[in-house]
Picture 1 (cartoon, rainbow, N blue to C red):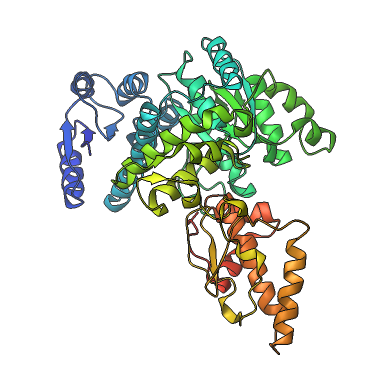
Picture 2 (picture 1 turned 120 degrees about the vertical axis):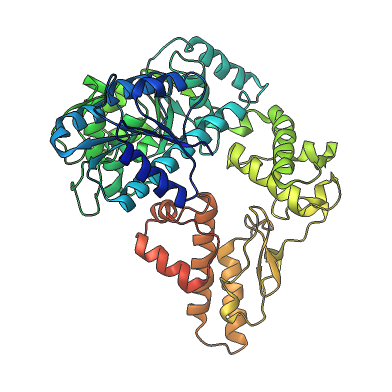
Length: 507
């Protein structure tokens, strides 16, 4: 980790910050004036820069301007006396991460620097992932059309609406549009509007002032400010609450917005790329999406094909994901046999590229041997004709009890275990057989055995299966799963605890 730079002409301020950060095992580098720090930036960069606002020679605001011009993602904390609050406002407008009023509480100062470090590490990880991510893979004609569209848009700042099914790679396309645009040297900020609770989304987008609401202890920059000069990617825009659509429309119209609880208009120089898997025209007709916002977003429309529309890319993508998975786990790369590749290419993959990636993770961990054959694939993918046994064909008639809903966690595609019987996540039914008839058969068997509380036991199993399916769909994001299921956040939290479901992400 890089050191924390401290810029102040006051020896005592530098000394006390150096000692406090040393106790936290954080390296520091100090400067007595802004000019020396500017010169050092020619050959080195800090993790976080902490600077006084008024010093002999160049000011902290000039240093801030220099930093933001060259390293827009570097957090800068401006120190100021209480009488310099007007300058603090100017610091925020210049892109400062936060200001620290003198005299300050040392513990709070260290806490603020740590928050700035977290922001710095997060943004650097995004930049690293962008540099490590290859160009979008695809040789199919449908993907070539996408590549041509990205090429045509390479020198444009126009708003783009990306449509396509979930898991088809819309964010990769957005990153490619940013990477090949005039804004490529500036930040790329992504936000899934469906994953943020409605009451927090406004603050997430536009930021908030200190004291704007309960818990707002400090001023916070929103995603529009974080993306200044760069690109803001708004995923699942069709799920944005109606009242927030009005605020977004204003930003797109005149480039101005207000922080939550703020009275000072902020200017946004941001290119917006939006994406959705929903039919926005239908949502407009249903009154769920503003028509004027739809037309403002739908300047250039780019449709991303589903994986089943580009089956010839499945072998290429499979090889890439198997290599990535093996590299992450430190194991040898699995190789797919030709029949196995042909079989995968015949599947529809409703989860698209994301589902294929998860399958490759499962293969790397679970498939026996280095060469993977068709029978080595998850049971829910393999047809009965090639010898896979589907547990759904023979409903379990043994005692269920608390075993319902208590299956161990597993990779996507791996069968769940209930009383030792494997149930595929996507069951393969015999002709004319449905899950309702299987449920009826199971209930009949339990009643014949004289079991009690049948509804409760089967109900727990049903709830567990549905909640797990939703969590797999949202990659463990509890709030997103609750939205998809149409239940409240508290309800899904209680159900997860009651049913003993693991693998849920903290949010």
